[in-house]
Image (cartoon, rainbow, N blue to C red; front, side, top):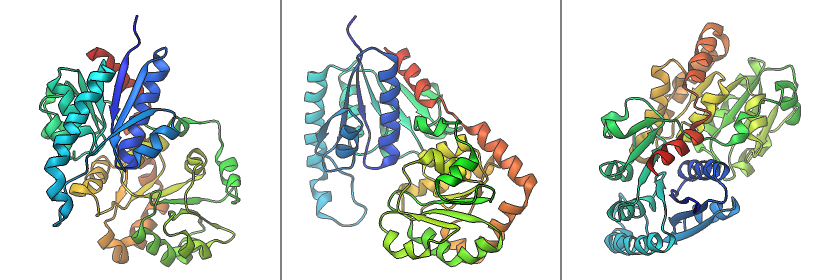
Length: 361
């Protein structure tokens, strides 16, 4: 039998790329020597990340429509046309069994062309508020894998499958003990640990908050692991001390999550999926600088379930200490939060999505 041939398209941000890679890895693990090709947007981060993960990628000439007046908007119709033609030739040459899109600029024209050529298509939507690309594609796509309930508000209900977001396999490593994880970062194995995650580049407002609250954390007998982001490390590395670890980025996420007793995080879809599997008391501070304010909607979905607390950036100065004190002192709230978070966890999401792909082919 000929091997299955899968095209995966998703990029622009890690939130689209890492689910795409997780799906490809699960597909590769299930089938002997499948042909897998990624399609991304030229000049975007997937053109670097995907080859590093061991997969081939082809780039098409596409970018998003700018909200502000921009010369790029004049080129947008031409880019769409060219990217559709490029997608046509990619699909005709590769002859995929199925095409999967995880969002981002490139997935729009590629999946649109796959639909026109009658190739089975599936999209995976990470957020509780979908982007415009997936909303357009949903009208003709064969299946839609989602991470949140009540997505029939945006997509045809008959096509929806609740699978969750694929997460990195390392997140499921339960062999590390909390004491060992804390020692890994040079911290006291017996002391309660706060982990702060602002994304790989960092979050300016969260970093400003943490810098102002270091003494407040100490008064609560907390030690801190602070991932401040590559853009901000030079500014904040001076805060490193015996019980405050400051890192630009933490690659050993399994160690980081295991070391945590309480977590402050942005509300990106991938982070929330991982945090649900981790199941620690959680305060979400969504980024307001994202399309359609989708991080706020992601966080709200957890708050409604009692699985997290939420503070918007505009509330940090007035409410942070009160809300955070509740988070670390209310044991009943914490136990309820951890229970609800774990109930939302979908650790087998990547495999479930592969199963949905196979139902199509």
